[in-house]
Image (tube, rainbow, N blue to C red; front, side, top):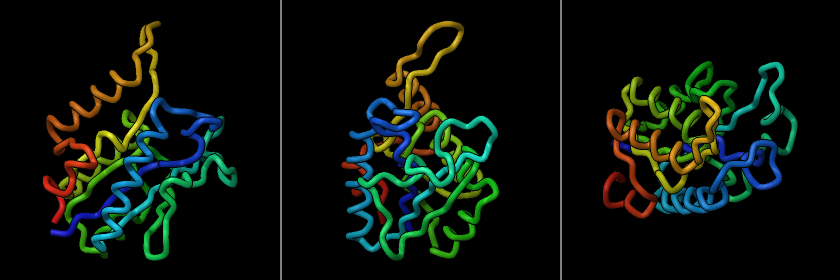
Length: 184
């Protein structure tokens, strides 16, 4: 079994000064960078997924803008693949599945943004496609949401989605736990 790191939507618009700033994006990207260093040191495959919004009326991740670029804390290097997507699910209308299979990956350590949207959609799809997944809780972030006139704080949104993923889709762990719990 080969484990690959899947970094989903760690892009500038989610950081301070971006068009859709998330709660805790800087702390999450620092932890994602730690996971990235670990995978690079071990020579394991790394896949960066970036979103470009093509939907009419989109306000962030607009093609050709700096906001759609991968954040400087987790820059791809030669040999690391970058997949561009246009939907929350990283596999929808992309060649990510083919790339992962070509790399021999059967397990994925997943980090990214937003926990309640693209991270969730990507993990669920990956498991449905036969991958074993672990979600890196401290290397992911989201934002406050509103429902029925009340604000649900980002920490609660994050926790609820991680709890749901852990219940049926795979373990949720910190970057520090990753080497002993999930790596080859």
